Image (cartoon, rainbow, N blue to C red; front, side, top):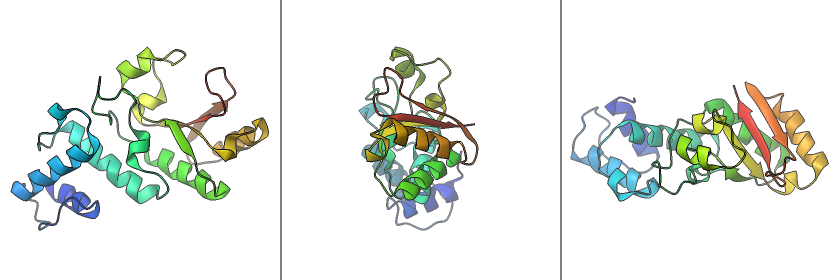
Length: 187
């Protein structure tokens, strides 16, 4: 987990904390935790101003998305269980995934709509066709679509480009439940 000084620094860069970066977890820091939680967490019970593992994942993910993917928002990667099983941010988003995703976005200069980002295990298990060890549950996969995926030729081009990216693992499209979306993941 992040130390208090790093938490304050990240919260400050994200616009949630205006206090001193001193490594002391005082009232201002705890209020910043709660403000961050209110913005992103779905369940009221998760909004407590306490810095635990769920808030650590949230804060680190918010910072990674801000720093590595200027064309995406953290909410796009949120688990779709709607707070039924998790806070919405059940894992740490992989840096290579974010860098590679932004790289594709830059190469094509075309918006990408994420249809599936992170998934908690329970939500993943509820989906028809999902695999038990899905990289979605580890913050290492996304499915997306856009005008850059609207033909089979374009989807294949994306898959080919993905395999040249840092730590790229697997990419596919054109399965019965994918529509015009493309799945990409990293090692």
